[in-house]
Figure (cartoon, rainbow, N blue to C red):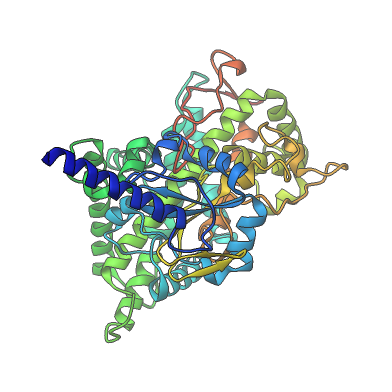
Length: 491
C-alpha cells in the first residue's frame, strides 16, 4: 500500500512537472521538445556532441528554441541571423554569462570569464586596455610571436625529419606568448614544470569536452559527491592556481608601479590605487582567476587550431604546396612574416580562415545568461535562463557557405582570387562578450603557420589518407586528433 502511494505521488509530480514544461510558466517562451523530470531533455541529446542535437531540433522548433539540460532552462539560438540579432543588435540584453559549474569551481566564482554586471565591466575594460598597451594586436606583440616562432622552428628542426607529435611543441609556443603578456617571461620547452602545467590545460579542455564534463555542469552537486576523473582534473587546476599565485607573489615583491612589466604588475598597481574603494573589483581573488582565464583560454584553443591546421594541410598537400608558393613569392624564406604581409597573401589568408571555420573550436560558445527578462523575436526569455549561441550552426550554415561540411578555401575568395570576408565567420563569437584575445589569436595563427610553411613541408608517415579531420572530443570544444607527423626541411 505504501509503495503504491509513493508511486502514485511520484507519477502525479512527474505529470505536473511535464505540464509546467508545456506551459513553461511563460506563454511567450520559445518552443521546444517536452522533457522529463529532473533530467529534462538530456536523453535526447547526443552526449558526445550535444550541439548536433540542438541544431537538429531547430528544424522542428525554429531558430530560437527551448531545451532543458537537467533542470536548467536553456534557450538555443541557431543560425547566423538569430545569433547576430541577439549578440550584436541586442548586445546589451545578452551580455550575461552563465554560471557554468565547472568553470565556477575552477575560478572560485571570480575573474573575467564568468562574471556579470559591474565586475565584468571593470575587468573587461581593464583587461582589453592592458593587453593592448602590452602590444596585443600591435607591433610589440608581433615581435614576441616572431621570436617565439624561431624557437619552434629550431625545435622542429631537431626532429631531423623523423616523425614526432607536435602537440606540446605547439602548446609551449602559444603558451609562451601568453606568459610574456601575463608573467613577462617565457619558459624552456624542456622545463618539466611548464610541460606539466600545459598537460593540465590540455586535460582540462578534454574533460570539459567529454560526457563526464558535461554531466558535471548539469549535476554539479551529484558529481562532487561521486568518485571519478572530475576530482583529479579539479586537483590539477588547483595546482595551476597555486602556480599563478606564486607568480603573483613574486611580482608583489619586485613591483615597480612606475614601470609595469606585464598584466600582473598593472593589476597589482590598480589594486593599490583602489585599496580604499569598497566597491572595487581590483582585488586578489579577481586577479588570480582572471590570469587563470587568460592562461587557459589563450593556450589550448589557439594551439589546437594550429595543430588542426597542420592536419588539414597534410590531408590536402596541394593546398599546402600552393600556400608555400604564394609565401615564397611574397616573403621568401629569408625573413620573418609580418602581419602586413597578410593582405598580399589572399590564398593563405583564405585557407587559415577556412581551417578555423571547419574546426569550429567552440561550437556552443561560452553560454550566455539572462540576468533579466529579455524580449527577443516576440518571445520572452525569462531571467536565469541559460542562452546558447550555437556558433556551430553559424559556421556550418547552408545559407552562408557553399559547401559547409567540406574544406574549401573558396569560401573566402572572390572570382578574382582576392580575399573576401564573410560576416558569418564567428569562431570567436560576437558582441560584447566576444573573446578578448581574438586579435592575439588571429596574429598567432597567421605568423606561426606562415613561418612553419616557410621552413617545412608537413606529411604523415602513412600518407594523407591516414589523417582523420573529425574531432577526438566534442562538446564544449572540438578537440582535434593527435598525430605523429613528419616535418621535411625545405631547400
